[in-house]
Image 1 (cartoon, rainbow, N blue to C red):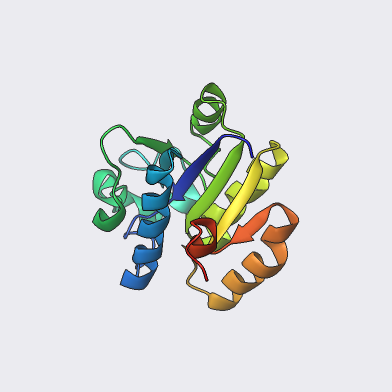
Image 2 (image 1 turned 90 degrees about the vertical axis):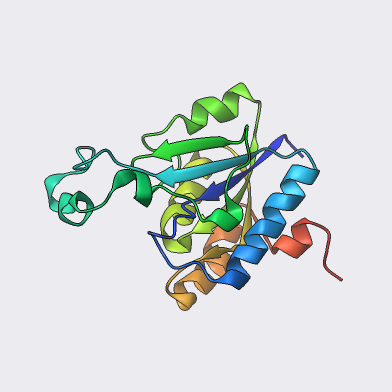
Length: 176
């Protein structure tokens, strides 16, 4: 398998409530990645005060946010010193960020994905990464969506067309 990285997408409590059992699975994925030398890259969506990066029709709800508070990662899964934080300006981890440059510089060709929302950052990143010829593994139970049915359809029907879909336990060799 090609050199890998774990992308932890939008684990910002301001985006979506993050249940403890979900955070435990993400923690398990991060712990396994660190233990096996797989770099963990955190990706957050972030905007400047007033959200000048967004078109006016989307600025209303963003204008009341404190950008630094909005970009905070859930403490249970926060980066360790030396782990990279990538700031994106749109839904995909690639759009408006330097993620591609970071991955290529490190020779990374295989991406493991965890994060929220399955129908947002995960879906957009899967599609864009696939179009950029990355090998993909989606950690299904380390992804979360406010709509359980949409999550189910994506991990069972859509993502397998672009790459591999595993549970955290299966990826970490903990199943069985």
